[in-house]
Image 1 (cartoon, one colour):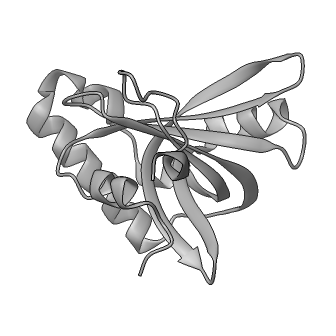
Image 2: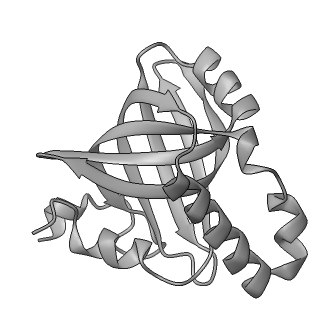
Length: 157
């Protein structure tokens, strides 16, 4: 049995492009936002963990803008219908991309090309330009527009 909410697992396995944003916010400072290009969920024992692929240049700006260690959030939105989830948590570490990260990025690139060919130039970068950032997720929210937007997934059960 997975420790991830069923709704989120179903979402990340959809065969549609995702648009990903990573943000850092803290008291009395405007949030800093950057684009993510791939996300993969994993877990260690009871920890909910995600890896997010971010351009090196954006990660440098984000990490300089937030207190260390600081909270981060990841918003994932399906490009076809705006179904979206926000994951909040704490930065754990960063590393070079793994083969699995490369595969996630390529899959997202293919999906964007299939659904939104005119957007393909916006995601034309080399995977070597990215870094993988790991977060320990503490909360998962439904963000899809509608009456349940902003609901903590655990609260809806």
